[in-house]
Length: 326
Ligand SMILES: NC(=O)c1ccc[n+]([C@@H]2O[C@H](COP(=O)([O-])OP(=O)(O)OC[C@H]3O[C@@H](n4cnc5c(N)ncnc54)[C@H](OP(=O)(O)O)[C@@H]3O)[C@@H](O)[C@H]2O)c1
Image (cartoon, rainbow, N blue to C red; front, side, top):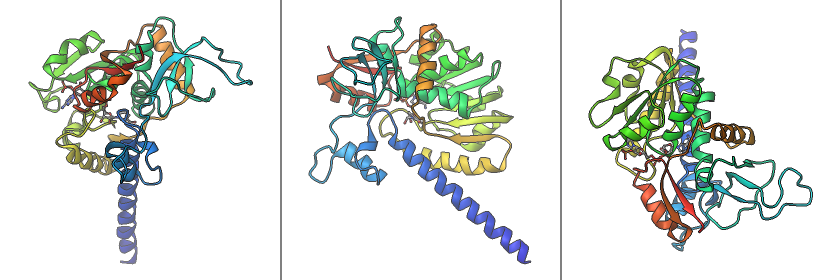
């Protein structure tokens, strides 16, 4: 009797810990999205940071006016102990406040030489989105050659990298997108494309080893049904950038999937991409070899940044949106 009660309470404590862990993870993930540098507002309080970043502080002014993370450009000057970079080197990387004419970065952080075959616009579109795709597929999804991989949200900033990176691992890739993006997703290497306006991918007969989900618009059971018994669903996002209908429902759905997957053979994993130099070099190699080519939707001037963010926040970008200084 006592053992039964202890087990029951242990199960409750574990469930609560899992829910709290997932919530903390998701808040951090939400703070990490590329459309706005949410870290800077108030690091100790994520929700306050979100509000300050999006809507300004109590005085109505944005707390941090330098948004953005991804950048590419030419080295202007280096510190006296720096030996691996010199003025004139063409580089790309990630740094908070990158929507600016200059960024100041530490050499051992995520800054690497830009491959010569890439333009600055292409290089600047890579860091957060491509690292998210690489780490999600390789580290969380344990992608292997020959596996069947489905990318839900294949036409967006992260999705266009995910399709190409999955192909570079030798996977058979199915991309899910809307009608207007079918040709685009096919052109970046997807073996199959599912138009979500015509077909629900969870109703098909195909089974996948890995679902890389950037949208989160299907339930745990629906996605489980199309996963192989030991398949993995990497829950990378909950739809295109910006606020949209179903945002809260999808967030709760992912939390539900995360908890329920603890009790089945398939894994449902959420994560936050982390910058590191090694992965930036892997991405540079992928670009250099032509295995991955960034898809650029629109380019704006620095003075048009607000328009660029407004466009991005509609959640329908086709690849990446880039700010150009010239
Ligand atoms: N885990 C992390 O560390 C991390 C890092 C970065 C981003 N994220 C998250 O990842 C998600 C995607 O980011 P992103 O930068 O790729 O966003 P994005 O570029 O804004 O994605 C827009 C794309 O999503 C497509 N889309 C919208 N609804 C769809 C649906 N129901 N089915 C399939 N595709 C749909 C849109 O196509 P249509 O317009 O044709 O519908 C559009 O091409 C976001 O939720 C973001 O917050 C997570």
